[in-house]
Length: 212
Image 1 (spheres, one colour):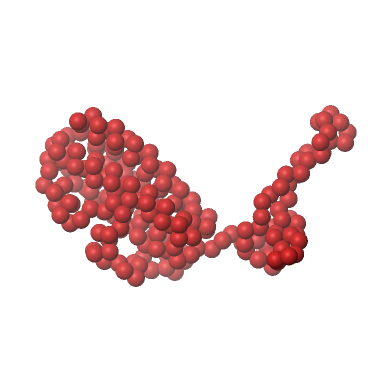
Image 2 (tube, helix red, strand yellow):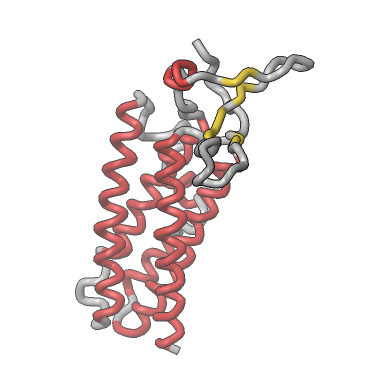
């Protein structure tokens, strides 16, 4: 069995001849598995490659998903406040997008945890821990948002949600810094969070600027 590891850089190999030349061969590629210290590498065959398993999830992946669920949940609690507090179609549309995307992502994260037999709650789960996660509102900040109306609400909502999204991007950075994100599924999810929330931050900053 081929060890699960970074196998090395794929090296393109081509025969330099014109495409019309009978000697022309299309470019091929090869994957080389690094050898032990002082030993040469070994080119892997197709059979070898079929036995290579993708990297598994790590504790960093589990912490990221466990933390991102309450992080997303608070974002949904924020969007739930819009009824009776905003008259802005733009803010309403943004909130609906957040509700749909983050609601779907919560379901995906719960499935990810269940498939790996990882508990939904981390070892430090709880209100105090949640408040320490990047970008999350404290109880006092959430209450302030809850009491606002009209333009004041829109301004507070956008400001808080921008900070909340920026916190999610920080969590993605922390995931990779801790050695996570090697598993294809966790890497894909983290990249999607980073891309989607980065785009939404730009939109919210533009909307906030229009409010003055």
